[in-house]
Every structure is written in C-alpha cells, then in structure tokens.
Image (cartoon, rainbow, N blue to C red):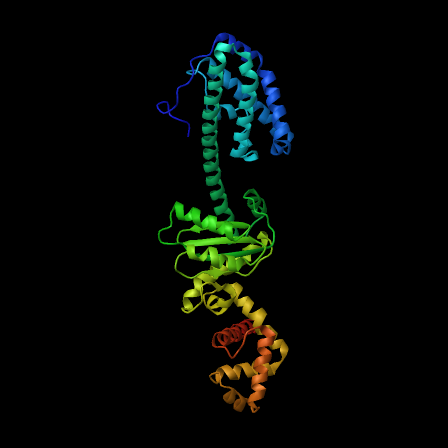
Length: 398
C-alpha cells in the first residue's frame, strides 16, 4: 500500500514556476519519447493489440501530467495510480500485469529523468531528480494496491462464476456452459474428471484457497464447487488425472468417502460424470469397506438400490443384456453358481455338467462383461444386474 503521510519520506517543496512551465510545454515530447522507449525495449508491449497500446499511451501521458501537477504543489497533486489509470478502462489490468506496469513506470521515470531534469535550472536539478524518484516510488506502491484490489475483485467474481459452472454441471449442463468455462480460462484439452468428497470440518477461506491451488497443480484445468459439507471438483487436461487427484487433492478433503465419476471428453460431456459421482457419494454408505477413492462405476449396485436410474440402465445395458445375448448357458450357470453359495461343485451338480465346464463358463462371463463372478464383490454386482434386468423385462412384458 502507499506510504501513509506519517511514514512517507520528505517530499521536495513545490517546484519553481519556470521548471513547471518548461515541463508542461514538454509533456508531448516526454510522452512520445516514453512510447518510443516502450516500443523499443518491451516485447510484451509490441505484442499488445493496438487499442491496448493506445490506452497505455494515455496512461503514460496521464502519469507525466500528474507528476508535473504534483511537483508544482505536492498538497494538490496526486501520486495515486488509480487516478492515473482512470484514463484507461478497468479491463487494462487484465491485459498487462503488475510486473508490466512497473516496467512502464520505470521507463517513464527514466524518460523524465533524462529529459525533464535538463529543463530545470542548475539550482533546481537535484531537487527535481529527487522529486522524480519519490514520485515514481509512490506510484509503484499505489499501482500494487490497484492491482491487489483488481485481483481481489476478479477472484471474488471468478469464485461466483466457478460455483455457477459447477452447479450447471450438476444440473446437467446448458448452452452457456462452454462460454462460462472459457471466461474462467478452461482450455478444454485432454479428458475431464469429476470427483466428489466431503469438505474438511474446519473449511474456511484459507483452506478453500489452498484446495484450489492444489487442484490447479494437479491438472491443467480445475473447477471447485463447495456446497455446504460437499466438495465437487472438476479436473481437465492430459495425463493421469486420477493419480494426480490422489496425490494432491485427497489429503485436503474431509476424512469421508471420495467418489470419482467416469472419465468424460470435453467439459460439455462432464455432466453425466458429475451425476454419477454425486449418486455414488449418496450411496457409498451401503458399502462400508469401499476404497477411498472409489469409482462411481464400482458402486452400481448401491446406486441402483438408492434409486439412481443411470446405474440401473448401466447394469441392464452393460451386464444383463450382453449375458442374455451370449446365450442361455451363461446366464443359467451364473444363476446356479450364485444360488449355490458360489460353489463350483454345487453348480455343476445342479446343471449336470463337469465342474470344469462351470469354471469355463464363469471365465467366459468375466471376459464378456469385465466382472469376475468368482470375486465376492464382483459377483454381487452381477447378481444385482440379473435382478435389475429381470425386473426391467417384467415391466416391459406388462
């Protein structure tokens, strides 16, 4: 922040009228020289749009004029960067960074030193040089405050927009989603992953900021939505997003379960992943030994029991229907194996086949649908799929 009147070093007395008059007559010359130096020394300035360069020219001119007014009468003139930047639109702070602004101040000061001091009488040159240095320092401090306030306002706006985007994903997305994430800088490269967990019990602004930084370290793109005791995180980019989330994000969430939604393509396709993750976090209590994190796809039985239509459809389309299409023996064998308490010999006796035949058919089921009937958990998933599928068939038959 700018120095307070009590802590600010001594400022030179009001400048002589002759020096002030010469400075005012040379304002255009000083501005032109400053712009020439900017164009010759700063690559970032040359890469700006013509409109932004013209705004910077106005800012430089306003800065030189403000210095002259301040030098003429320090009690009337202003070193406030906000007054100087008023010549340009607020959006200019998005086009140039604080570092760039300080480079701008340094060059303008150098130009004033090199040219303005020569306009002063010998007796006033030392005083004018000191005034230039004091004024430039005060402007630099004030510029830092302007940028801090702009960053604070932009951060609050971004947080509100981020919450709207996450809420839109949860509700299924809409036509404005892509433009909103673009405003947040979402690059939409690679894959998209949604995860849902519990907020830490002591979640406050500092912890929220740390969580957001961890998410941005874990992935190229990141959105964080905090909804009471629940945290919804959307990650985007290339590489292993799940592993990055395990390493960087899970330690900053609450101790409760964490559910990963299925991988999605672009952000516009992430709504289905968000719904699956949310359904998973609502149903995970039915599986007390679930790993942390757990994939929403591993919670299909619990989600179906909790009334999730997406899980019921997945069980029918991805498990039940492929088993039916493969032929009766596979479904019959699975039924008997599960009904006989997962006993190969019991299923073989019931089916009047050799146990190796049962073993072969079970292996075929695993190859066909990706779930192993001989594993206790995966067998439960298959058993639920059979039940849901048959219920669906009964409804259609009616």
